[in-house]
Length: 323
Image (cartoon, rainbow, N blue to C red; front, side, top):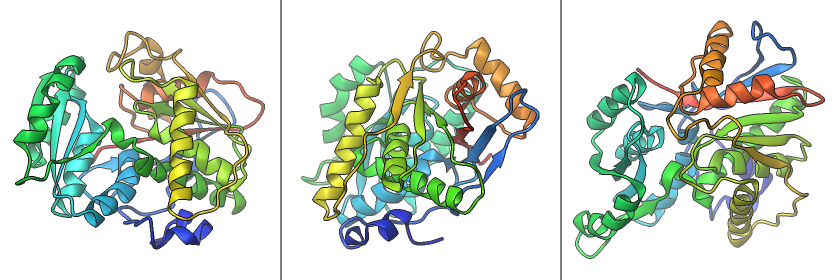
């Protein structure tokens, strides 16, 4: 599918919100066997993306990159941890459009996953600045903007995870896609969708997309990042800001209350620190044919295994390595 579900549902947006398909949609859904619990499904985003990285970040770039191109942006500045999936995807997909990515990197616990990701980042063509902590990154920001200015034009800033309202549209799109799969009989309507929340855009977008589609599905955001505000109210505000963008760009949007909640029960010691429950969940996922990263998806899968709603549970696998 090359056209977006969002444009099909709200055609007034076609001329005001550009979209660039970067992967093959829809992503597959299947019931998971061998996990020890029934009624557990997966929407597998790991294969999404036609470039050097996949997963949920690519969905956000499908809206962010054409918007940046429309504005004539040639350099973006963003932030992430040293194992950032977001920064890598932004660098690889932006490069194809002539957009250079500068990343300020904050330390996270180092393991083999992080070391491999740093290698990918160094090969991506991005400019890397190791600013180490959030306060030091904030202090360095004015210098970073000036250092990477082109003439009088400063870089455009993209927040961590691409979770600006335009980026959130990537998971509004995925929520509408999920609703189409439910309507086609590929899976039952989930009682709950479980996803990791590192910057909030995926969960906020899913909740907004499900509401637009008329699904009664609740989105459970499993907080894996202790450096950003990711409470339920924070995620709801991000969804509201995204709905406001849709209205500003010409769509009529009337929404029921969002079905959205967040939990910190699986955070453990903080961002990048594995948990025993996440490690066990990753092993259970391997038995079901899923490879999960320890920072995001393993913790979310632990929540999916332990949640007990009255109906099917859908786990969103957001991790998309490409070697």
